[in-house]
Image: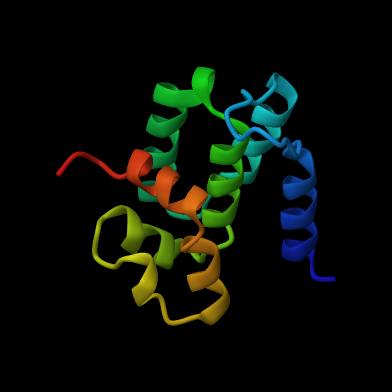
Length: 116
């Protein structure tokens, strides 16, 4: 298993599985998710930081899973989604499309995108 896959697996394991997606994320899981969301592009980091500043106290387990799904994308694909240059269906990589197309990922994407 590569290091990035290992990091993704450990981040996914940090998100508690819950039957009800409305359960709030605990502080430890939130901290791990914040660390997982660190990106290589400043633009992504700025939008993600704004997201956490707005939603961290109300972030649910299902939303955390959606954010984790989006973090599987490359920095450029994520930025294209955030800036509305592309929609999840337009991503070329099959596994990226699957991750970005989950209902949870779509919900979080709407929360992450700056107001039009």
